[in-house]
Amino acid sequence: FFHLTLILLTFLNISPITALNINRALTMLFAGRGKCYVIDNQDMTIDYTFEFVLSDLDKSIINTLMPQIAGVSVTINEI
Image (tube, rainbow, N blue to C red; front, side):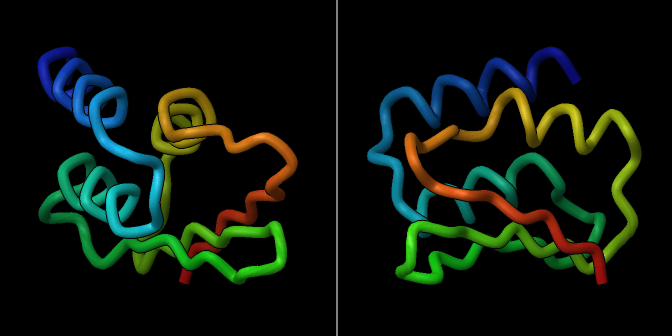
């Protein structure tokens, strides 16, 4: 898990923060668990959608490791 976290942080630090790159990071982080993606709503909000149940650790990782864009509201949806 620690190795994957370092890879994710490296990827996010060298890549521009776009919905496409966040989706790539989510795919790396949650590979094999189901579909997950981010949608830029073009109104200063983004939605993270997970088609599986997130654990408390998963939610913590999303809140601490994924990019925090100033002034953008984030919603996490579990389907």
